[in-house]
Image (cartoon, rainbow, N blue to C red):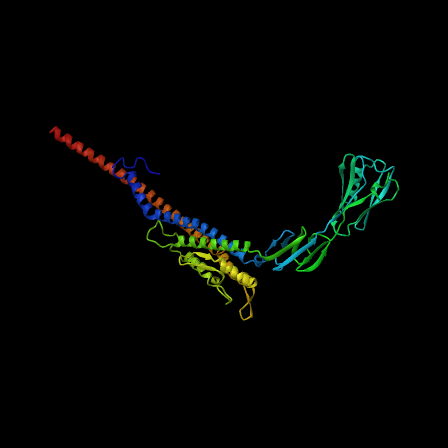
Length: 455
């Protein structure tokens, strides 16, 4: 704190003079440190942007180095007789399916009842329901109605048969039994065990509406029979749904949708990280365009490593350019999908090995084992992006530098505080001395003036 009375004796050694001197010292000794702290803080903020961009880049590479990315399959069908799905890594091929008939369910109907609330029996008893060779016992009594029988059947045998009561016409209600499964083995019969039913409408009076038959079709001309229209056991990984009689041509190919999406993501993230590194390391005499890390060799080296990694593919079997990837003079990457697709059409296994690692068959039929281009790229990018990696180490160094600068600033401020505390005391003493001299001079002058007047 200043001394408010400082300068009252001299009007020379004032608090204003001390403040001006202190401001000059602050400008020379403290402000440069403050500016350095702010600059290092700006570097940390820029480094966070760089870290996020590098993490995105690393993640995009990680997805491309996965071998399963090449296992997706797509099935296309011409015709309406079938639907086909293909599981990952299933056979890639084209084939024909010609459906003669689809599989059907066994459907039976009872004799006619006047109402669904009509009772079916004269007393307690049971009946046997046989579906596809399996027996089910249905217990009834004198109060059991046609609708109640439906519920009893669904409770006892609902996994094999569906029972419902349908109103066919006025005063014409019938029990409809439909097998859950399709095929020629789904016969349905009902037998009265107790001879307590009112009549034979639920036994010998049950008649077929539709007979269950097996599906018949050809696979590439080979005759095939199945009890179900959902065929999952013909070719491993194929799901074939028979829909209607007719011919269809099917093509199972590699599904490249996910692959090309991830390739585009890699190219986008590469261009993003290079653009960010270029901006932050740009050299210029103009401070408004000069990058904050223009003088930082570690960040400049990071940019150089990322740019050079495209040329660092090991294995001696090709370059990224051979698969459609290129970088122009301005540093922007692009990918020619035509070139990439041509490589995939020619040999998916080799593209998979080049990208993700594995056995690569060379033109002379020799086989080499590759670690994979994107596996190597990931090691580089993740080396910077991971916790404790290159960028984190730079951030730690910046934090340590800021701590040291703050310590220097604290020490410089304390030194100036001490200096100006001493100077305030000295100024106060000097001011008092000058005040005494001024007072003595004033008294002497007054005495001289008085003596001269008296004469």
